[in-house]
Length: 376
Image 1 (cartoon, rainbow, N blue to C red):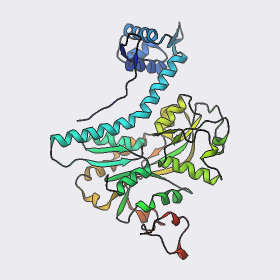
Image 2: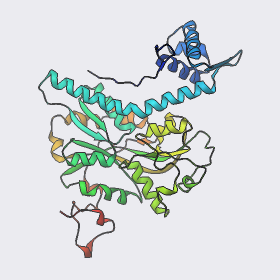
Image 3: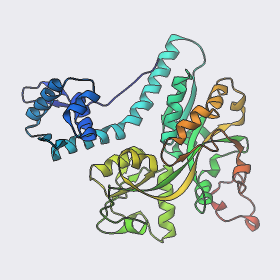
Image 4: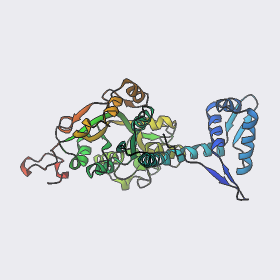
């Protein structure tokens, strides 16, 4: 059983009749891809006449042309058509992951009503394309997971309170590794384990052709640049704040710092729609929405669990999946992702030697950054 929730764009005409635009938007997207109405209709498995009638209907409803056809040159979207397609992409990118989370909750409720068997593992995780791939692969293998998307810090907080069994978060490699880790350290314990889901590239996403010439964090502070940010508590926003701190700046120096979206895909779609010039995100999102990508750093996406979970029979098929060549191939297909360490299990102190076991050391031996830890 798989519950699917999809956003649907509809239009209410002057006579209060509701018109669903999903099929029309699929056709417009196909025309944008193929540059030809015949090829687009073939790709969607519909007749040319039906596609033509669909275009006529949506143009009558909207009061403007959505496609321009030129003999010998095929078909292309008008400005109205392009805006409709980009807005549809924004809607799916913005609410799609939220609907996925709701769908898994509904599945869990239905399964619980149908049987008294133990449910699937509950995971709260920062949104990302590898965790999406994990969820899809689990469904393919008939492994029940209860996945909800949360920011990295929110996911780890929920895990520490016992509200989920696995938390997903990401920590940069390099100079930002320690300061980001220190923001999570108080919630981590020696009996916790880290499982590498993937490594991935994070950077600045900008419009195709990079019309504003945005190449660095400093460029985000220009008056002519509009930014779109991730929510408070997300790992990506932590990274941005630390990069700004390194420059001696704060969010007040960036136009749009308080404008937020909840996923990498939503940031990319927001830029595609022309509502912002730049945003931080993973390379996969940029490529998915045909944006330019300026890499800034690489990071590990990690799953955190209790050591006891490794012996839980519900976890065995999940670990087998993580360590399978099939799943690693799926991760490697994602632009900017690398599965070389996927499925690796580590103790926290082995992965991060400066981990203080959740205890603040005495003042005379306190390492740099440990002031963020709480005393027991």
